[in-house]
Length: 159
Image (cartoon, rainbow, N blue to C red; front, top):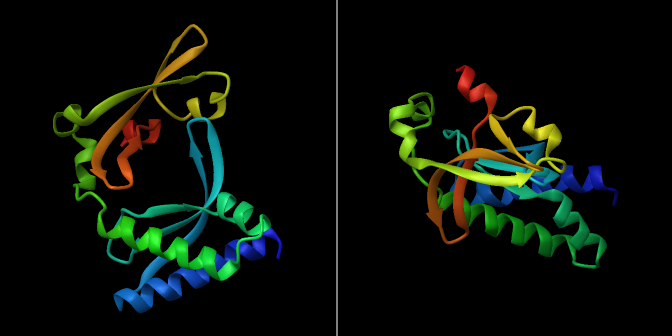
């Protein structure tokens, strides 16, 4: 199975599993995720009534498939990860992002390689220091899967 077919099948099958578990309508879409130091194809999963979701790294999952892991095992694992992450996702007010007074206590800095992140840095506020750059994130919560953060973008500042 090629990568595009894998992504389409993964999105459809994860949605079916999550819809059957929750009895609801889960939104699932394919997209490219730009993160500091990496870009990957993802399947974004979120409840119908939410702006907050989870990204499943389809690139990494396809590498597992190419490495010999069964497709069904990958789908079941991805659905479990998405289900767990959605149940433990932090609860926060999306409208608060436009209010600095509400968000300033959750602001954190991240030091990254300027060269490796040049394209992404064009879309985020940052300060260059030598060959590094300081970018900014909002820390939105802690879960068993790790710390949830959102990269501050120029678009956020424009709104």
